Image (tube, rainbow over all chains, first blue to last red; front, side):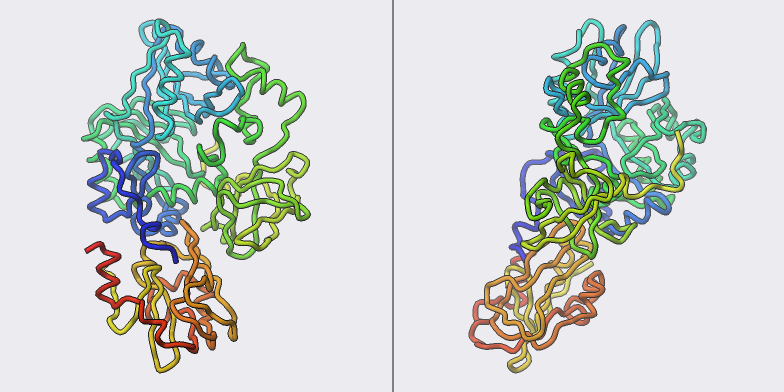
Length: 380
Length: 129
């Protein structure tokens, strides 16, 4: 095996969330992630993974960037930054989308929650990735008219807890005043959580039904304890990764980044060229749509138990044609799954390819994404 | 969970252990390493009759989180392989020093074990004492 130094996270000055002490109390194993010291697992990745698929698990995602957005022209200002048509959003609805650079490269993937108009001001919440938070903030401030749209970064003030799984709604309900069953998938509302104001969205990153709750730090600590006492299993980044990968959701910095466009990443459903005015990156996307993309992110499944990991080469007839971006042994399915960029000509479902794992070639086949679909997930 | 470091074993800094019985060595990996790796999903081990060379990789161990090479503490010939653990690698975590052994090897040169660590030395190293 490797030397110990490679197994133990480096001792760098890392940020900690308000729930850090609770993770220590539960003897979580910690890791560095995007500049944060985060739990990678509590009782074990497989058990945590199963808890989310069959009951309920919770994740501290307070490290993610949290922006409160307001302004007379908030929506029209944000429209320039994303390929999705935000005008479609009704108050209480959300859009998963991407911030793009001029080459249509993905600066970050985000969720924008539109809260509606209040006293002539449009209000919204944006949740972004932890490692990209300051980059995103600078990009937004640089590209919106700050008279028309203001950004308030509440990342360090608020706790964000994801409660995910078929039992998430019924368990979380106990601590929330509003009727959670009235929130549709991707819906959200301002809510009273443990008697205090908060924000709840029916979104997640696991492929299950579930909620993301944003509250002040002290309320978040109490909520985490209450959920734990109610039997919700604490989950770390390890299970978060295996869950999101089964659901074939992209991980920023691994499956998508500034060199990949949403059309290459198979996110065509969030690109609304027909109904949109100009936005940053539009030209490249329009060209890609007209001529079709050169490469695509596809889902692969392999036999046996060898995991195709990030950076491993993908081959076709002995020639390297692409690279694995993410891979794991799917705990639910029992076989290895992976995401990889391959040439469009080799991206059809059923296409046979090979993955090089430690010097040997293993057959892989392109399959439909997601690899796993929950039976209990709410339909939009 | 307090991790065990049986005192009758020899350890390497790359976390493999050796249990000596005459000229036969039983090879496995330490409880500390199993704990660090998390859920183990895959083991790749040599065949019976294959030769091991001290310091060289003889297989891989893969968890949900990571894949690591296994390194030989001694040179020798594989005389037995724990196929039960290859079939069910997740069970390695239950008993790494007993049922979770990996290989039995006929040793070429006993003195090759001179630079391995005692249980106390290994524990001090991995737990940073």
